[in-house]
Image 1: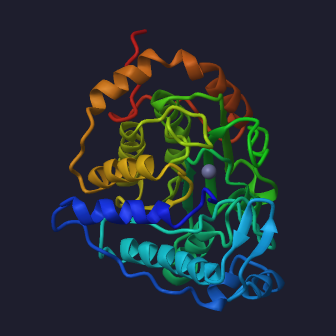
Image 2: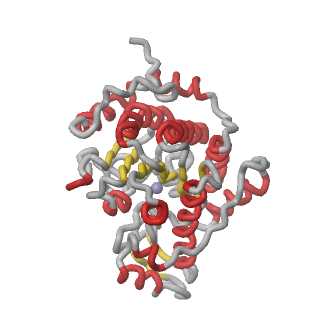
Image 3: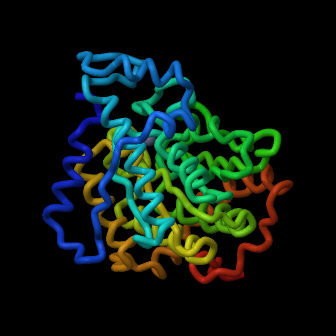
Amino acid sequence: MHPESPQRLQSIYSMLDHKDFGPDLVHIEPRFATLDEILWVHDPHYVDRILDSADRAQVRYDPDTVTSPQTYKAAWLAAGGVMEAVKAVLTKEVRNAFALVRPPGHHAQKDRAMGFCIFNNEAIGVRYAMKAHGIKRVLIVDWDVHHGNGIQSIFYDDPHVLYFSAHREDFYPWTGEEQEVGAGKGEGYIVNVPLEVGCSNSCYGNSFRHLLWPIANQYRPELIVVSAGFDTHHSDPLGSMNVTPEGFARMTALLMELAADLCEARLVLVLEGGYNPQALRDSVEMVLWELLGSSMINKEEMRQVEDAQYDEIAETIQRVKAVHRRYWDFEVEEENDAFIDTRQP
Ligand SMILES: [Zn+2]
């Protein structure tokens, strides 16, 4: 079976059926994106190619990306679902949202399907926030194990989007080195943090606290969108990282804190990878508790572990800072409670 299967969402839906998250968890009905909305990001001839797959048994767009007769519909609905989530947050119908959609999107290029992705759901959601709601600066944080090369290429010269990706180095899709920083007016607005294989919760906590926090504070986004992949989970068949469900909750908590500080708490998570259905279900559950304000983790303890394990990622952080020092000031990083560096001097 292909790893990007309907079982992924079925596993999450069955968790949602069995757990009582209380009245604060509301369902947002997805819709199909319109053709115009898809064309905000994708080339017309590419959209035609995807439409050609309708009702055909199978079309293979790249070695990993293959469609079934209804894939085009799911892709249209995934993009529309993300836009509805963005809308619900921007109109204050909800405080934050998690778009549980598939197929994933962050590898999808303007003119090409890639790495299980058909349409770039996040990019379409971001364009929607800008065109329909007048948002001018969006921070996209990508914690999927893979680099989101599609998001990067779509916004490479665009200062209205800051793309921050922490991903496994020297791994599919073989992009995302720290030297890739954007171009033209977008130079400095792509921040890549390549991580060693086997990274645990602390790697991510520390890269958020020591790199993302100072940069985001200077960028001052009006909306934060997360490419939430769960293929860094320790039992994922593809990722080879060591993140636990508590680690995903910790990342969520840090981003909620950032969103509360910078953009009226506007935070939209979008499901990306995660190919062990049980791990996906457990991790999404922990993230939902966090988003609902019923945290299941001990943040203080996790912060202390991050401080104790800082050395594991110190070199990576220094490398990224060396590249980005000409765009961002990293001396501001000591001011926020959630992010504060508690190591002894
Ligand atoms: Zn992935």
